[in-house]
Image 1 (tube, rainbow, N blue to C red):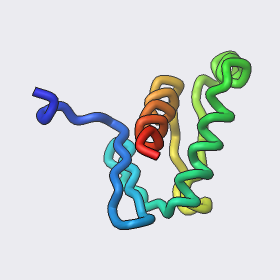
Image 2: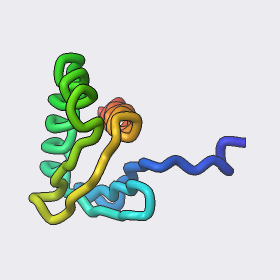
Image 3: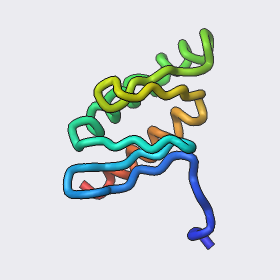
Length: 93
């Protein structure tokens, strides 16, 4: 049953230290250090005080990913989905 469900955000391990992040239709290749940097950015943005500030102002975030090669527009639910996917990705370590 779960094999037919597709999620908007997916992180897959492509090779030893390379990962692929899929957000909607966009596919972004990340090295492990870039993935760590993304995790830190998302964690900072999803602290409750920062989430409240984002909701009070624009209700979205523009996020540079992979050493500023990609610019991603994320609304609050998508940002939280990305946080959950990153937590799941690092749960194996």
